[in-house]
Length: 155
Image (cartoon, rainbow, N blue to C red; front, side, top):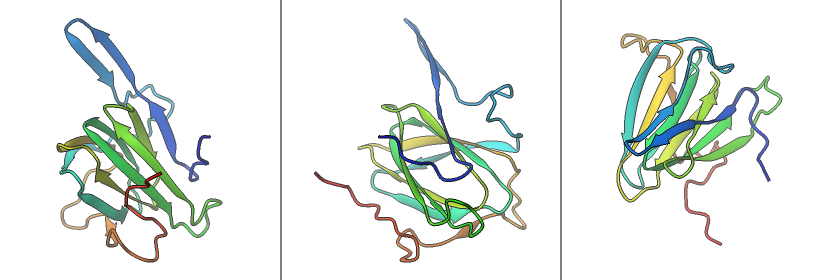
């Protein structure tokens, strides 16, 4: 059963064009209905088992797609005025599930590398990174005020 999404979050199934040479995967186009504006594109890697989280942005909207390996992404809606305040979303992105996730401003997010090798995530954001005044607000990955467990759910 699909999970209810945090207000403003969008999940986009990515289009792969495959032939005998390999494949091309479209991540974001300016004519996509979920395109907002362009700030910059960057890649980030995660070593196996490493958690990058938690953080949020006041202005920036993220659009993240894991293109190599797999990550477990978690979102937490800390926006008190949001109808989904306090809600958690969890997604598995990467080679075995080619999706991208739009993360609204104000939503805490992070991800954990779940491959046996480093993952690579492409993030297209709406704002240019300001080195002198970063729009980035952090909490530790194990902050008890965020009700999320990064461990493997066995069963």
